[in-house]
Image (cartoon, rainbow, N blue to C red; front, side, top):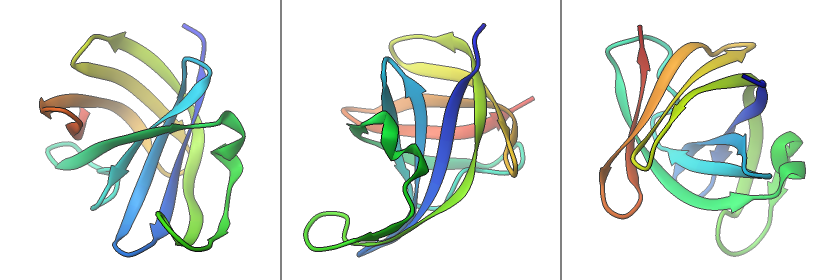
Amino acid sequence: MVAKRFVVQEHWASHHHFDFRLEMDDVLKSWAVPKGVPEKSGVKHLAINVEDHALDYIDFEGEISGGYGAGTVKIFDKGEYELIKRSEHSLIFELKGEVLKGKYKLMKFKEPNQYLLFMIK
């Protein structure tokens, strides 16, 4: 499997959250994760699928002014990931970041855009 890039951006907008992005299908597939990406197994966090972003957004840090998403963005972690399995309702991948390391699963649990994000053994 070919390693792709990922980034987790901490976002202080109207509600503090983390933006989790995976390089996939020539875009950054993106999820807003209110409590952040879990750093240990047994913890499950809500991840809300949001619009795809352009690949050049992977290095963005700074201020977003006015409108949707206005606030400060800072990179929390970045690195590469390997996709292990992809289906209509879930993704299994291994993160190889500076902070986040390990196998994770994103599993759709409510329509249309709610997922659970958790580390697997």
